[in-house]
Length: 617
Image (tube, rainbow, N blue to C red; front, side, top):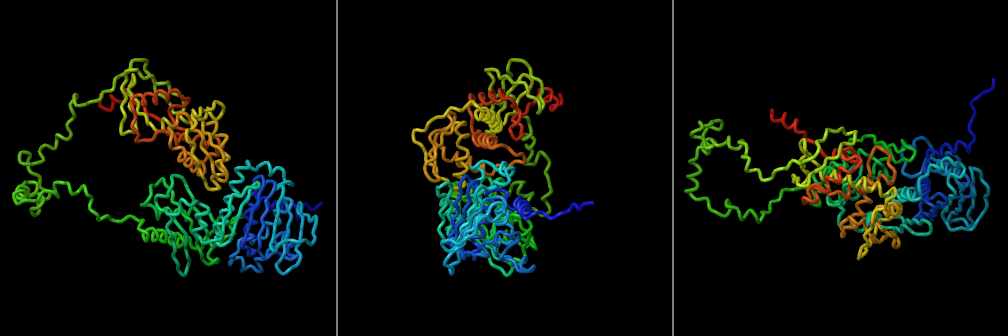
């Protein structure tokens, strides 16, 4: 009988490893940038074409490689970082697994030019599908240039799973930012399709943070710096007014390695607990330095998830450091002892407390009740007590005191509805008077009771169906601006907006590129108030970036949901009779008028028989 277990050939083993390490172009960018940092480079340049699908090139001025090392670096598990097993627990470099270059060579056409400063000639190597096609001496600058072409050319099925160029480019920009922010003392640049997106000069940490996030945060950062024997933490948190309603710019670095940690994110959030609303998220860029033996960074192939030996200590330290920083800069809440000018106008301050006034008050029965010994529980009989009129507080108001009455409309009575069936439209009579309650709800009488309509949720449903129709064919009318507004974004947001431009055009937004990271807003939807176009686009991008849902929605669906939520009239906005009537009538022309896109009810119907039962009739 033949044996059935056999060793995989190296090229197949490398492709399997590539499936774990190189999941998309951004994965290769991360590995190559980290290798350049480990090589001691002071200048690192990243060049990509077609979002990395056709070209990814990293050029550095590091220490380079000898001819033998240049050949060996593409072998499986070849690394210069680990000599024995103990080294695994004291890792301070970025790339150490020894799989990245071998994996890249298995799924792309790779060309390497490298030279050490002490060598006269460098080495050129060309590899395809893990096979060395060419190796020869060459003239090149000191350092290393690695060029990846046609990613996944040997695995067409994997290439088919890649997203659009704009989407893949966003991931590349994210990985670039993670490495660039970890090493502010190095120069980084990113060029895409011949256009330079980033040019980050070497500098200090605050300069790098502002280079990446934008100079608008210059006055909104609070420095964090705490040092102990166990760990050090430094960096910046945003002031409370820099918090956003969506998960904004949040970065954690442990030993200069970007990580994702919901646990540490909660620690920062708890430090801001009394400073920002519960639905807001603080900005932070925090760096933790601690003994590598206290952290395991090899629990995930991308090394972006790590485990601490003692998570509770790290959590408490992060929380305390952020709180201390906020308190130091007078950001934390404190008692305000300054006297409000309005208080000076009160009778208690203005008028003196005369002896006559004192005798009048001290002679009252209520004063004696609370001041005489053992009398705090005493209640006088009705005829003597000053509280004898307490029952009047609970007396029902007279009918004539009610200033607003709801007129019952004439028309057919409506039956109840289920949340899962389209309810019958409620026809409002022309003379029906609508009432706005707490500038949030609209009360509308019906033949069989009344409706309690939530104005914001109802408008969200109306806009959602309108935008859904527009983005799938019937384009929204655009109102051109008399004075177009220029919008400048950070490079990652500029890449995202470029991706959304065709869909925004269908929704009535006319936005055109205007040089590097800038756009001109030429027009907005015709029914949108003019004058706030810039903030509207910025908020839309922020919501879209951090769209949270358990369901994987398409880009268009996410855009429609974000826009309908953003443009809906908010609770607290005063509405006229005509506006309320239009809102209610338009709500019942929707295909699904009773719930929002997220499943919240837009209105509640109170039937007459239910009202009767409430009053025992």
